[in-house]
Length: 246
Image (cartoon, rainbow, N blue to C red):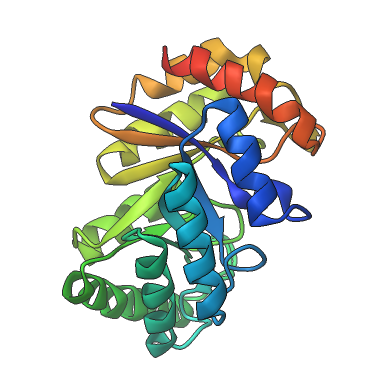
């Protein structure tokens, strides 16, 4: 089953109310709230307001997009993100796997990163949440081999991955990453980028259908950013997303 939705950071300038209104217009029922602007981790009152808004409008929070960076933020700080996610009604929390890419991270830094990842996984198992690593440049999961090594060594159902195509890599490289990490992947961030350029998603429907051949079972496909950053483009991008999952 493929579920469609939106990453809230696509429109940081819009309110939660405006985002929910536009989601409904497009027929999208799932959202990943970002912890930086829309659903601040330290503002419990606002989190409950957002939860009520979702309930009133039939919107589901499928994940909480945190900016917690492993080995940068103290491990114990994760508890406030867990609390925020549970208020919003999700058990999926996105984390960033450090702040250094695999080409520059030292052996000592890698050892600390792995230790923190294992500690977080134990917390996740105890708290009933799943931490998903952002598949992103300048983090330890920027490389398919290191990401796989991390998943295998942590070896926890509470420690998993997101996936998105890397706009600086080839289609074949992205297919390899998707296939290799598919068993560990929960959510996919969907866009059509090449290098520093953004293009309409409708031009990449076939490419995304190919990417999806690597993933079985239930997944959430979440639009991330518009090619022009305009909310008016959301309906067109949603049509393309629907064509991908059809």
